[in-house]
Length: 403
Image (cartoon, rainbow, N blue to C red):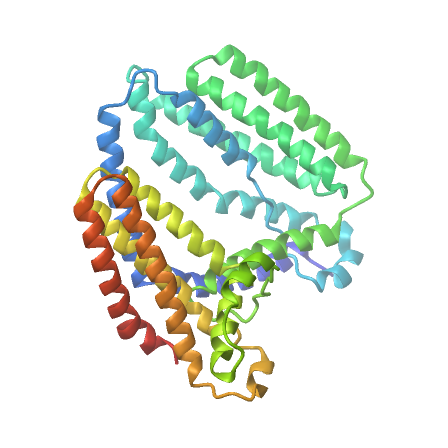
């Protein structure tokens, strides 16, 4: 007899074993040190900023938006796979225990987000409302957990609806209500918080009614949602280790391709062209590179101490180069490269050349941020020191890994 509870336990065990293997590579020594530095620096400057916090600072609005978005983002991890579309549909009436466990697992693994947000906003909350006790803040976090569970269940019910427009509308309305509820809670207007909570409860019951009218479970939608989340995890893990399950996404970006494809047509430029196009058209590298430049630029712009600015600039140069070096393994499963009538030795040279170009470009951008803030010493040190760091890191560390 089919036992969906036992089946879920086996599926969860396989899932945890697989993800933990990749998490070990993601949180390796390099990333752990970088994260520790980021958190320490942010905590220090966060505390310094709170000392001079203006009395009219919109704490309630910021926390309301953050907490509202936090509880609205409540995806359901079903751990379903494509073969389940064939083998489990017949057992749909026996899957209640499986999906109950899936909801419980989804809620538990998202608790870390609640804890992180609660820890991050705690100092701001007490600095803005010094007359409130810690119990009031704990009560607010408890309400966050209640709304988190409610939104998770509502999302599960809406996954029985096939029309994407209906699901998007429901999510949009619930998100607005969540934001408004937590805005009133943080601002201390409990009457309006109670009224909007009742409105959320009515919408919750309406979603239940809509769900009950559906024919059954939309299996293909559940599999698609779960597979998309796993692919997102694989794309992150692929920056640190070889992930054979990854399905590479390709985007056209024709105007960007035209800007970088100005190489002469000959054999020696084969891999230069290939990795330039890979960087532009892949769904991973360009976005990561731009995000690191933007985040690093914001750190450099807002941090007051010039030496901390320089440290952050070098740290982001390191992170970008460390992430981009995985492009070397991007085509490892593509058999067509093996039949190219060219030598494979220039492959490493093409990747290191691309890394030089990307890192120098990032160094120049960070230096211009220093120049914009009139930190001329930081501009000179970052420009010269960044170029030196890129040269030593690529020739010392990267080349040893490109094998």
